[in-house]
Image (cartoon, rainbow, N blue to C red):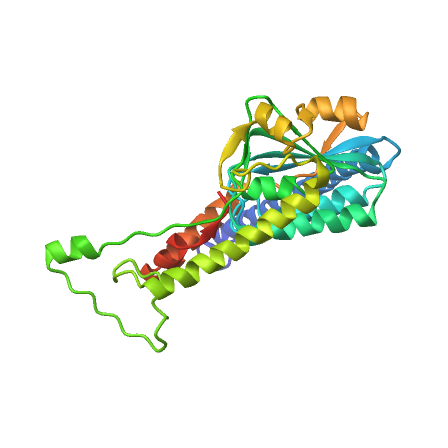
Length: 315
């Protein structure tokens, strides 16, 4: 036969490569269509889930809305004013919310964050007068957490809960004595004679100390006013009520810091009269926590650490 020697192998190779390409293309299309069907299936499942959730929330079923306030109250925590206020807005806006239970288990935290939540609760209660809001304190509802609770219509506690601590604290350290022993000299320059106020490596300045005390006293009075406005005539004020002391739940009821005993379930069942509970709490995801902690660790500096250590706290 004529032709270039080995042409048979070349033709076979071409046919084989074409077949392989066709198989690969077919396989890619199969994978593509399987992914499309998987996406459609997941979309259907997700749609059904959100439909059922929406139906439960807004389809005619009355419920008690639950919002958790757990851990330290700060702008960087799960118990931030941003998260709590978003949950409050959603709970009050839901037409099937019969009442709201603010489930508190927190030692306190930022007076700014607590004040924001307190004022927002008061605003929302005026806007939605038919939706009551009750605070339920678990293990602890102290300082900034009690600040928030004071905005509720009523406060319920366990007899063994820790309640109160109506005071303000600013913490810091002084290392001047240790530096003298070690022969370490502190060198700092500022523009503004009070710019280094609270510096733990410098001797305490009486004038600056008095300025800080005035600030703490002012924040303390804001806290006291919020409690008195929220609790009103129910308070049985004692000389040490606003001294920073804390009490058991049993004592707090006698003092008028709380109204009675109960937990989230009992308040939903017996007070709101809606035992079906829908959780409106905004919870931080694992990725959010990792990102936040990583960002905090990367962004920290020696100066920032000093400022954080001297932050004003309600706890």
